Amino acid sequence: MKSLVLVKQVPDSNSAFRVNAAGTWVDETNLSYTVNDFDRYALEELLKLKDAGKVEEVVALTVGGADAAAAIRTCLATGADRAIHVKDDAISGSDPFVVARAIHAAIASEGFGLILGGLQADDDNHTQVGGLVAGLLGWPFASAAVGLSLLDASTLRVERELENNEVQVVDVTLPAVVTVQTGMNTPRYASLKGIMAAKKKPVSTLALSDLRLGPKDVEAKLRTVSLAPPPKGKGAEILTGTPEEVAKALVGRIREKTGVL
Amino acid sequence: MAKVLVLAEHDGKNLKEISFELLGMAHRAASGGLVKALLLGEGVSELASKLAARGASEVIQVEGASVRHYTADGYCRALVPVIQEESPDLVLLGHTPNGWDLAPLVAARFGAPAATGCSNVVLENGKGRFTRKAFNGKFVHETEIEGARPMIATVEKGASTPVEGETSGTVRSVSAPAEAELRTRHVEIKKAEAGGLDLSQASIIVSAGRGIGAPEKLEVIRALAAALGGQIGASRAVTDAGWLPHEHQIGSSGVSVSPKLYIACGISGAIQHVVGMKSSGYIVAINKDADAPIFGVADVGVVGDLFDIVPALTQAVKDARP
Image (cartoon, rainbow over all chains, first blue to last red; front, side):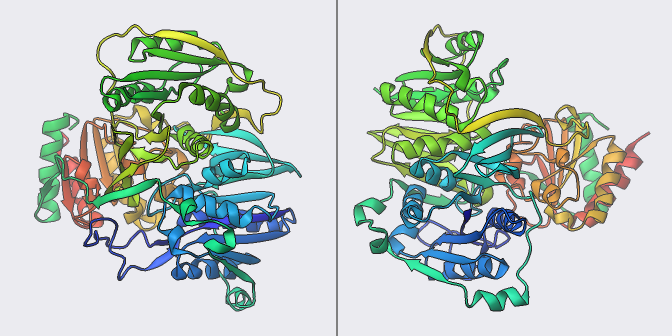
């Protein structure tokens, strides 16, 4: 079975973010980028299936500008066999549906049996590209997996994370798209050998014209109006002083407001 | 006149609170327009009457074996024909594990993206304005959708209040498509970990976040929790790293809690965590980063190193006890 992992290059979530001058997104200068955390778990899950002999090939796909090539290199160095880079400004600046449409166009003739991705991206938090790709392919979908196992050649058992420490076990008929939660495995890191080997692995770079998509097909229906820091709201009363002073003040507040002391 | 459908969530016996919140949000978005509820399941007529009494002018009850349990395939197949027939301006789902499972599949059928994790929805002249969060709650992301009908959106838990007073809507039953070829099949719902901890009932919770740095450093959290007679909670970063079992995790994918006292230590306040604890009675936040979103939901905060503040607080609590 051929498998695909969808990855996204995102700003490191520990960055000190500022809104850009236009107030439309974060200021991207001086940010360091990394593979979206959720996607690392998705890649690891496929590499584990490959190690177990259940998957023959692991392909990594990203949609993004020239910078996103770094995400692809990381995946190849970590163990993916080849990569697809959908690189077109008209697509990467658009909305999740356009991204999904581009992914669909890029892989429609590939014959993948299993596509994994992260539940969401750490930057836009849209939580939908995997499901949109499944919808466009007409394939079954399951999200937020915390456990995956192949029951047979055409059935994947998925443990979906629910609320309140519960999981739903669902059997999914392949081919399928599944998104994964963080924490489901321990993603491996690229070895030096892997980094060297990655340089020889094939990467196909596709633009709009390669995907037979026209300007109309990549028009965003979901548009950003603005990005802004959250309103301060009530905001916390901030206590200052030495640790002992603030601790004493906190005990006073807790006693007064909650009666628990 | 605007028309909005909401998808009710339930466990077969009870409606989840998000169902009523969605009805409230739908009424605000429709501003005097039509609000209907979609209820999928088997033997759920009692739940249908509750929705009709809480703001749905009509409840479309889709019954059948294929929707006895939630699965993406079963629900999507049952929902799409109903949505096509109703042709609403907007369909609202919860930003919940089942909502984020289903919303993109349904949205793809209608050839548009969904607006996800919304805290507010406004309809105007065929456009939708959706207020959501990006960068895990660090920013408010105002978005709009144009040229899609219906628009599909998921709504954050706690973003809206239910409709006040009692309404008298009607209930209409339709049959779900036959089960034969479902490609996602429910097996069971089980506990992720059987540790027996139930934080949802705790009255005092001391929580650790990424800022704790290493598992052995959880001792300072344990000491404070012990001094207060409280339980230990965690953000996802801590349980993902295996520093605490999953059952300690508080947030949209963990447990929702509302203790009298919640102390967040080294927790930045990502939206996924905040939705699980913001209804706590009194919230204390201790974090190094003065810009951390946790200070936006806390009642009182200290900007500083938790390894200085938390032990001092533990001592002060001990001193305060008779």
